[in-house]
Amino acid sequence: MRIGDLVTYHGRACYLRGLDPMSVSRRRAQLEDAETHERFEVPLEEVEEREPPRFEEEGLS
Image 1 (cartoon, helix red, strand yellow):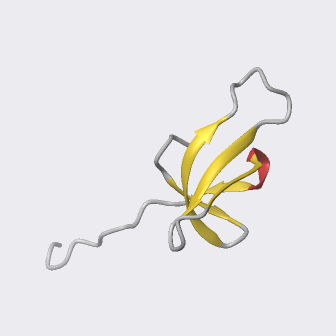
Image 2 (cartoon, rainbow, N blue to C red):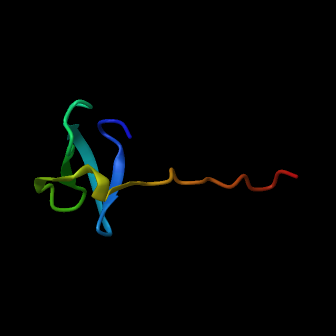
């Protein structure tokens, strides 16, 4: 995950806005809700990476 990536938190689409340093034992992520723009912090282990959208090539064999 990288800062700015679209991630999922409990089914909500959110942007990753920050992360605790690797040296922190219980890392937290700073998220921004993609719809409401609310910002909040959550345990990093509860954040899921989203797969990038797949664009299917039409008309190519």
